[in-house]
Length: 284
Image (cartoon, rainbow, N blue to C red; front, side):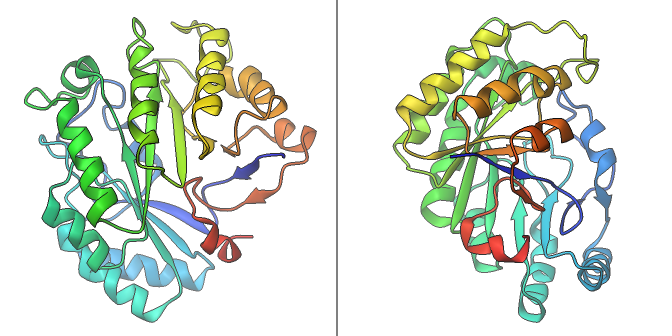
């Protein structure tokens, strides 16, 4: 079965709750991904922006932004806006919350967040040296994920990064094995983009065959659907996407190249790739 293509933008937009600022400044981002989001700085701005976008046809909102030094998105002040908007309009909200405690997970559910996009990182080198979370460890990420699944919003999509630690890809399969027990509705893989990684000839620290092998193992291990997320180098969009689609190793692909879309006659859904099936009608 052919995967579906998910295109963020248009009917589903990403909003940074912290504007362009981030206290954490992970070494692989340094705030650059915030530049491409819409920016708000207080709840009133968020409410005004969402009402405007809804009139223009937007039906999905990804709440993201910069993280605190504790690895959290400062979302609490915005949750009343989420609840109010959900009462007025038929829309969905997804969020990148970062690390959460039990009360925060319950708040996300109570106020109407539909989907949690959770970056599941089990490599202490990535957590401490790349994400700058010196006082955190894989146990903090495991605990946050467990809490979100048990007490958070109805849909939790683990995002598993590949290649953030180029000297070890083993932690990727550890993460796959960890989430397997929770039977998530979807698992999303991201591929590290090094500096200059969106140039077609950039030298990457891992081979195509290594990345392909991860997807083959994941497909064998999991009965869940697998998505290739929007974070991946252009090199892989040009070369790897086609092979993953041809081998039926993925069920969803985010932001594919136009030539890939046309070659495989993929159905396009104008939404984030973590969109649950029950909301598809809003974005086709």
